[in-house]
Length: 348
Image (cartoon, rainbow, N blue to C red; front, side):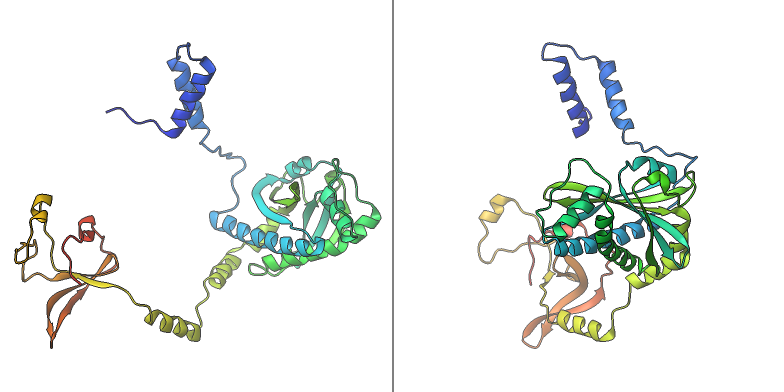
C-alpha cells in the first residue's frame, strides 16, 4: 500500500502544479529537492559559538513575568487614555548587545533604568509615536499616530515621566515573585548608540511587546544584560518561585472544598457480564429467553464510576435490596481497555 501524503506534501504538489501549468510535465528531481528544502525549514539552527544561556525553566519564568507586566500595563494605559490598549508579549530573544543597538533605529525613546540593589542597568525602548500619542490623549486630544517618528521634546518627556514611573512600578511588581528589585530612571536617549550599559559583545535578552491601539501597531522593548538575569534567575530564586507557585491550600479552604465535593452525585453501575449476539437473534428475543454471559458465576463483577472501573465486587442481597460487596479497589494506574467500556449487557 502506498504511503499517504502529508498536508505539506500535498501543498507542495499543488504549488508545483500551479507553477508548471496544466500541460507541463513534472520534474521528479526538482519536486524531491523542493520537499527536502521544505523539510529542512523545520530544522532549527544551533550556533555553538553562541549557546543558549537560558534553560527551559528560566524561559518559562521570563514569559510568566513579562506576560504579567504586559497585562497590568495594558490595564493602566487603557484607563489613562480612555481607550482600549492591547499589549502582548511577542517574543523573548537572546542577542548580543550590539545587535540590540543596531536594531534600534533613531529617533527612538530609550529609557536607561537603574536596577537596585543589583547595581545593573536595563534599557526600556518605547516607540516615540506611542509616546507622542500618549501625551496627546492625556491632554484631551484625538490621538493620532504619526507616520514618521520624531524625537520627543522636553515638555513631552516631562509628561511621559509619570507614565514611565508607573511602567517601572508594574515591572517591579511582575518581578516581585522572583526577585525584589527597584527601578529608577537614570537617563534618556533618542539614539541607541549613545546607550552603553555593557560591551557590545556581551549577551543580552530582549523582551518585545506589541502594542495595539485603534488598529495601529506599536512596540515596547526591554533589554536586560545577561549578567543581571543570571543573578535574578539563580537557583535560590527559581526554587522560591516554584514553592510560591505551588503554595499549599489552607486547611479551612481545603475542608470547604471537600464538603462541596461530598455533595456531588456520581453514577455507579455494576457490569454483571457481557455477550455478543447477532442482530437477527436480538430481534427475536422474548420474555423468558436466556442469554449466556462470558463471566462465570464465581468471578467478581466490575463496578464503574462514570466510565472508569473503580471496584471489583460480588453481587448479593442486603435485607430486601440487591447489593454489592466490594472485594478490591482498582488502582488508577490500570489501563482502561476498550472492551471494558462496552455496555451491551449491564445492570445498575
